[in-house]
Image (tube, one colour):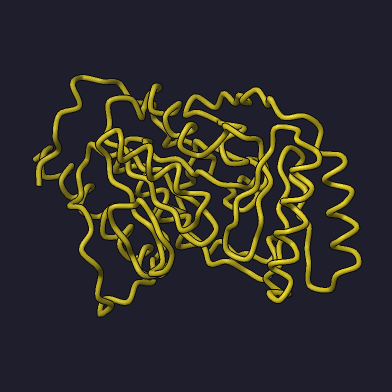
Amino acid sequence: MGLLPMDGRAFINLTDRFPTHLRIAPIDVDEGMPLPELPAPDPRWALFLDVDGTLIEIAKTPKEVCVEPEVRTTLCRLSDAFNGAIALVSGRPIETIDQLFQPLHLPTAGLHGIEVRNAADATYRVSNNGGSLTKIRETLEQFAKKTPGILLEDKGTTLALHYRQAPEREEEAKRLLADLLATHDEGYHFLQGKMVLEVKPSGINKGKAVEHLLTEAPFAGRIPVFIGDDVTDEDGFATVNRLGGHSIRVGENGKTVATFRIESVRQLRAWLVGLSEAILAGTEAAKG
């Protein structure tokens, strides 16, 4: 497979952001693991990757997640393969994402798109038309303190109410949030994720963050591919579908507008390894 021309576009070289030892780290992939039918690799892609439940497994609490060395290695290779056109898109703050993936420093959209860092390392924050979260935060803090198994993750401009360790409290938590948002209409809404209720400003989502990044190098002019696992990723799926790209949902359950599915985090990682190898091999063949 030869490398397709990119209309003479210049791309930012991110090589200096990825330490050499990560480039040669071994990747543990089960070669006998069957992979689903996914779109054929294309060097014109721009990759937008969710984090929790997509690149890494979901843990009992947000602080317990683990980013294995082979994940960093794969991201380095993908960045090389796609000339830096790879971004992380998460509900976590950019600062937290950097801590998880250090020493990597990728273009990133955090807090569901409230903050975005581009490939030139410039970060901007979307104007938040929502009001204060103070009253909602105080009520949810009280609920979490008195309810075993409930965890409130305070991200500043967004909140996440986790009930993974108290699934029997799901309906109670949903009713509480619905009542709070109806009483204190401050321009916020909530989405139900995997054992979590996310409170975020209305009108801000991952799809808009992706669309913004696509206006800048090295993403501009490329075919967007968004990969996620949750309701909070549906806006990303819808955006890349509209723009003629590909959307891939990790996991077999749940309604989705994604055009492809892959069974698990483990399968996705294996596919991403194969993807980077295919593109890099095509690049070398084109040089020869």
